[in-house]
Image 1: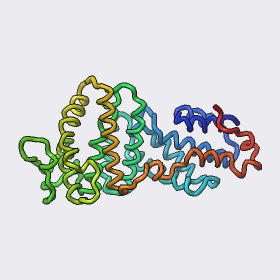
Image 2: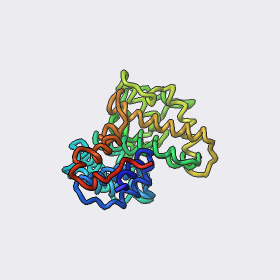
Image 3: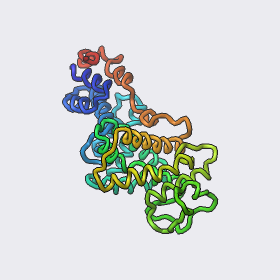
Image 4: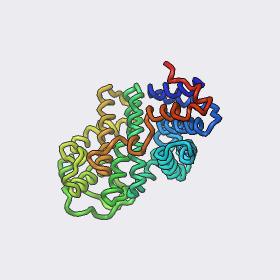
Length: 316
């Protein structure tokens, strides 16, 4: 039963592709081992790496494995709740239909629902994982291209959750009070065209302005005019627009800047949605730790389970 220990080794080194391959080869014969297989499989599934699927995740697989973990009586209750949360989120995405080749449109369909707190948390979870995984992309241009959708998706979600604005069908007039010009990088004042779908430039003004006005004591960088104004040049003009249409050459420092910027956008979701002390979303949703999974595999019941007795510590 070395395969079980090998799964733990792969997880310990964050080699989710190998862990996924190993866990798929397991043939567990007890409820406890089946629960171990499904927990490890679910961690690998939400880690992404799928060629198709919204934000690189096979959400149909997440729904299937999450349901299994939810119903695994051998698993701790907290793990079952974790499985239930991921299965519920996956159903929201799977219910939108196929995600292959139209990820941007499917993401847009979710962001307009972000007024729902649970959908907002789902988006924070999925986007934060997506940004983290981009570190593995070595080509600067490919990394930025993969992340292009993130800032706009975050702004769309924040608009729905905290500003009462559906970016695809915005109001004819904006709320009075916020200082929109403070967030606009232009020679003239900001001009709002009511009723038209909000593009990146408008979102980058409207959302931070409204958030700044409504949350004067809880301000991430995204609602600081000094942080936002330069983004009109750095984000929209220098990176997003050229990259959307060409294979622009980007330096490693530029791709790192863009990825860090995406981290800051997602962190704004965390701070505004869950407070200044918001923990990482994997912790927030209750993903089991490696130590807890190992203890579960090699725990107190090992003496009455022959397969657990034979399951060695993670091999090196």
